[in-house]
Structure formats: structure tokens, C-alpha cells
Image (cartoon, rainbow, N blue to C red; front, top):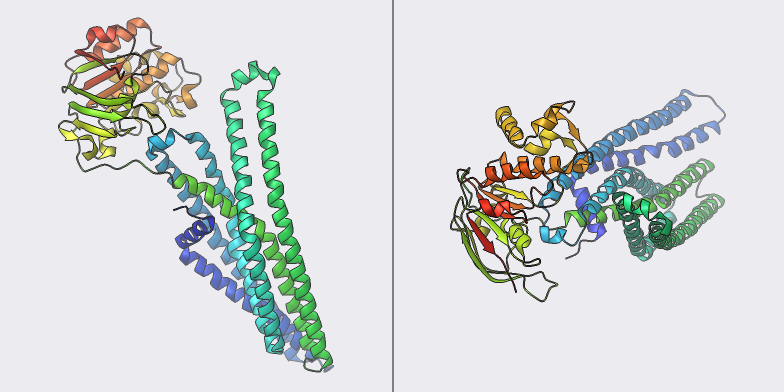
Length: 545
């Protein structure tokens, strides 16, 4: 079931029910206190008409000034509450993204670009900026309109009829034009994110676009996307203009109705001059409140759209947590596969259709087979990235699905030909938050001869590396990724071309270490480097044809 932006908005507000209740209580008091201004002025005018200076007149002036001061204090209190909500919202959103991104279903990530999803985090800022206007300005305007009409009704019951008529007109305007405004705002945002993603692609492949800048592909695609965005923006703007026009008409009708009715009551001597002046002030407050509502409409659309964009990320299914089985620490893993069946939904042919094999604990195995036979896919299945459609897969005689996934991952050492270096220190990239003694860390780095590289770095193992290790040699990147794996002493190593860019003499030495029968881990490796086959216990050929 698709969650609508409106429903997401109410869900967000429920998180801050207590704070919003306080804001509305303050808005209620502000609305009531604001009425002291017209009532006080009415009383002051009545006293001035007597032509005598009395202490009561000074008291009334003080009464009005105190009302203005109290309103200011309450507004500051509202701002403090909204600021707390904004800070909590930012922290909550940041932690939500950080928690969910590593747990996204891998199958879902095959169809979307994860970095593009992260752009949607910036919609949190849109919500932050929009909430004060919605929670404070909109609520205050609504209360002022309601209280103003109630006070006018005290002067004459005719104002009650006029108030209900105007409220009905306002509801009709929102009911008819509101959904269309949300739809056009969502479409506009869609093209905005497409353009942002394309600009990121230009930045990522900047060398290619630099070499082929003459053909202006980057500009042509950008121009197309900008045109689509501007077209969608224009449609949304037309909705806003239509709404603004209707609100202006509503404001004119409101002012005309209140002024004409007030003047008529004065001529009929049902209101005195003081009451009429007070009524005029109330009318001005109501009109100003309507103008606030008009200005906030666009902000409401922006917030609803932002919630929908963030909701797309939070709606992505997370990995199944699996069962309750766990592996013992440093326990070698035995694998048993029986009649595995797997195929991608859009493919007619199954990649695996009855694949079976057994791998003993601590056995070192090289996977071979022609291109497209599914070697890489098998490693991905064993690492939990993909789930089999049929068949049986056991780790240490327990079905794979019975294992608690988060616990299982700590026993796997996985290396795919993807650069997984992130912006941080070398220590952070190797340990990934794990607690390891300095001696173990030093021994691992020395084993891979990374200490020869680190000795030339300003801060050694605490030296900073860029995202993707842009300024690191490719051999160092691969060594860091191998260090990340072996320092945890996993029970199962799943490796795909892990040493491709490392010099041959070092490559052989690392292979000897990984494939040593003394190591208490099971190894499955895919590589064209022949020395792996020389040091393995067994070769498994995979052929799905």
C-alpha cells in the first residue's frame, strides 16, 4: 500500500505530539491575547469620547501594552520548541539514513543507485525550514481567524453566518486545488533529482567528459533535464497562481463582507464607533492571517514533497534478519549445497538449475568456469547478497536461512572487485569499528607489507585517505581490503580477484598465507592467477550450460 504525502506528514507530527500540543496551546493564548488590542482600543476610544482624563485610561493603555509583551514572550517560547523539533528531526533523519543504507535489500539495490538515494537526505533541510511556518505561522493564523470571527459574532450574530460561509469557501479551495498542487510538486521534485544525479555522473566520469567535451553530450542531456524540470515547475507554478488568485478573491469577499456588515450595523445603531473601530482592527487581523495562509501554501507543498522523497528511502525493504542460529567465534565453516536454483526475475533462463557441491571446513577451493557461468553470483549467494529460489544450502549442517544475518556477516570475509575504501583514516578502513589490539593490527599490516607504505605517511596508520582512496595506489587499496578481511579471522573467505593489482612476488606470498592449511578458515576464490590453483585443495568447475 502506497503511503500518501499527507499520511507521512501526520505520521511525522505524531512523533512530536507533546511539543506540537505546547505550540498550539501557546498559539491559543497568543490568539486570545491578541484580542486585547482591539478590545483595549475600543475601551480607550470610549473613554476619550467622554473628554476627561482618568486613571482608568492609563490602566487600559497598560493593559494593551502588557498584552503585546505577553504575545512576544509566547512567540519566543514557540520558537524554542520548534528549534528543538528541528534539531531532533535532523539527528533522527541522519541516523535513520546511516542505519538503513547498509541494511538495504541487495536485490533492491541492483535496480537503484544508492548514492542518488542519499541526495534525498537534503529534503530534511526543507522540512526543517518549513515546519516553523506550518506549526507557528499557520496555526497562529488559523487561531486568529477563528477568534476574530468569534469576537465579531459577539458584536452581531450576522457575523456568525458570514464566518461559516467564508470557512466553507476556504475548505472548497483547499479541497479542489490541494491534491493537484501536491502532484505537480512531486513531479517537479522528480526532475530535480534526475538532474542532480546526472550532474553527479558528470563529476564521477569527469575525465571521460573532459576528453569528449567537444561533442557536448553532457550539456545536451543536462539541457533536456533542465527543460523537463522547468516545464514541471511551470505547471506547479500555475497551480500556485490559481490558488493565490482564489485566495485573493476570498480576501476581497471577506473584507467586503465584514466592512459592509460593520458599516450597516453602525448606521442601524447596533454598534457604536468604538466597537466599529475594534471590529475594523479585527478585520485587519483576519485579512493579515489569510495572507499568511496564502504565503504558507507553497511551503506546505514543499514539506509534503520532501516527506515523500525521504519516505521513498525509508520504504526500501531491509535485509531479512534471518533466524536465531549463530556461528561460534573463529569456527571454520563447512558448506553443503543441494540442487540450488537461482535466476533473476527479468531473465527467462536460470543461472543455477540444480547446482550441488560440498566444501569441507578449512578446505581451500578455487572456483572455475566460463564467463557467465555464475561464479561471482555463487559468492554473492554465499555472502547473503542474493537468496536462492529453490534447493538447500547449509553452513555447518544448519540451513543458511536459519542464521542470524548480522551475526553471520561477522564470520565472513568478503572481497569483490569493487572499491570499498571510504573517507576516513587507514585504521578506520581496516578495523571498520572493530576492537583489535595494536599488536594484531601491526602484525596484519606487516604481513601485507603495508608498513613499508605507512612509514612514509605523516600519521602512519592514522593517516587520512580520500573517498575511494583516490590518491592511493591500486595495490595499496587491495592490500587494505585484504587486511580488513583477515584481521577479523573469519570462518569463511569469499574472494574474487582480490590481488589483481598487487606485484606478483607479493601476490604469491599473500596466497601462501591465505591458502595455508594451518589457517582455520574455509576459502572460495575466483581468479585467473594460476598460483591460486597450485595452492588450493580442490578445484570446483561451475558450468550452467
